[in-house]
Image (cartoon, rainbow, N blue to C red; front, side, top):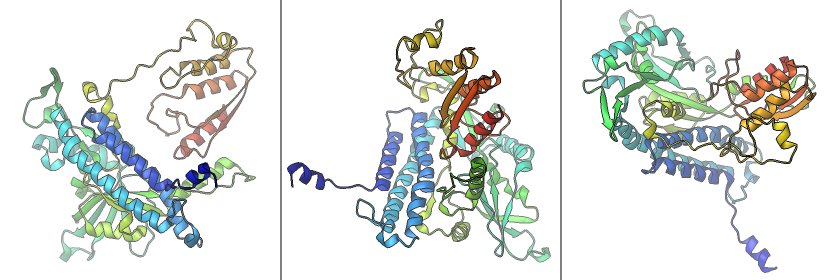
Length: 457
């Protein structure tokens, strides 16, 4: 054996899945850093949560299915551990990371934001005027769109959407002697995505104290907010006349999203993907994240989801931290985020000269995201309107923006200019071929809508 071969043979193999968890711990460390602005730290902590959602829905789901297969005894990771050992190690590492994540949120991030004029309030700490406002808000805006779902022992579990926040309630009759129901009821209430999760309290209902403060020499308004789930739990009694709420909790689940679709199917492949997406709500549940509050409800849900303790994650704080990303866009809080990097225009392109003239003189390299993406957009727009262009062929994997009329939203409110240019090219009589990746994970529904819209154009 040569020296090189000997050295290669001594290099250890690492578990792909455990290495991914270690990577996410490095993301967590960015959120723990004291030298980073508070809202940037909150952004990193939110990324930890969304990363783990995908990790459990894809990778842990795959390992769990392998564990339950006939090949479990022979399936050994390149690092030398079997599926059962992988899942045990993942659970220990992820529980540790999430505990640190929420300890940071409770003891550092939220108190720090409050000192900077941005306070997260629970209803039990609100003033009387604030409670009056929230009561009216619940009755007028929230109550009409809530749909309670009863859990019954002799009936299947209602379909619960992955990653969607739910409230669970344990109810008992207010007057047991005069009630036809002599048993407790268990009910879950999905939080409708159409409602804003962050409820801003009006200035006139502020807690006693100054309306503003001075931070870093600048005057800043005091902002106070309450979360939708806290309002639903607090005013949930409106939903259940004749019953009293004994216990409540919040939770979300992660389904197995590893799916199989026949790409050679003779019928419409888009329709096959739609069927797969519909079936996701019936796939195995891989994990439940829940708030403290009710051991009985937790155990009931865990039993129905067939989850043992390794797949239950209690968090003392808001679930689905991704919704707090929008706080970085609030005017007046710029000192709590990093200054945006300047996006430079490429010196190889000018606004006056057509894209075609420049690239006909030689190749141009764009360094994204440090340089502007505008030349790429202009390339499609000019091609769509150039009478000498007769055909456009491209591939779309993921594209941002909301799709008009589809109900599909993304982090961007702007309709994709590339897709708009392709539609315009088709309307101008050009032959347009766009290969759309329908299996772009977690963007499948959006991409199906893009594909249907382009096909119509």
